[in-house]
Length: 343
Image (cartoon, rainbow, N blue to C red; front, side, top):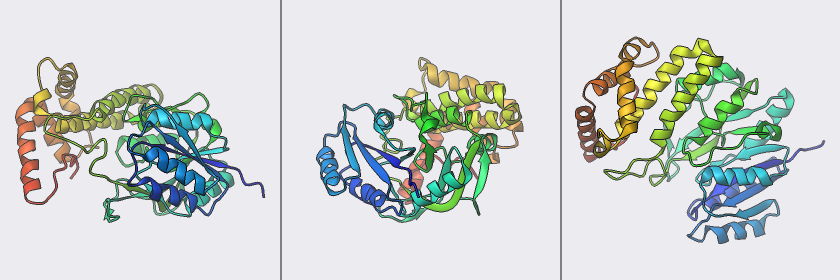
């Protein structure tokens, strides 16, 4: 049987403590017809040499070294170099089960799909299971593009490219947006408009390692990740797309817009909640203009609605109170995550 090649693209930056586990999990795949592209994005900790040592152990591993440009830039470099008929992505923090690509390529070729997704689990740095971010389905199912978009708008879907396998031609004319931190969501919106949907497998074959020092979690009192700006910008993009192409999802998109702005408000440092911060002022103005939507939207929880109304009325006061609540929770050993929007 003619076994088509999978190109697995791994963007790498200062990953000495986790890259070897990641790469060995890819090398251990039961589907062996693949190339593994390690794209070193200007590492400064010796990861570039580790890439070369790993490549010397397996002829399927290829290395590429480039100036630092971010994960999207590294992924795009990998896409441009890839020679496989199928493209997959794995983040250097994470690892996969040996059956992952065998199962995904089986589904792709049997069904003639344009995208297949394997389910994921979240683990901490010691390998302990964390609550699922995206609950796996009970059985295999084909999710058409509109339904997949609806699941994303309800924060139930998985926008990660790492859990998916695509025919190479899906990326014709498409690349990851560089300089953004919500890049998977942005590109997936483009691709969903051109494919019938995504075939989803229930097996949790991809393991996301939640690291305390990752881009979106590393914080000081006044630090603020760019991701919380990008999620608001992408919410505006998806509202325009929905109103133009998927009008039945209008209320879902409004809910998504409010939720993303609430996430921004729960994370923005109090020091940046100023009159001269145009982005903050636009978010605050949006919440005040959409008070009725916040109250009436059936897809927001009661807790979401209360927070939205409070932030619209007295954002700095609510943010200070929420910051104190998080500090108290952390001092009691309950963790300090702000991102508890549901319930």
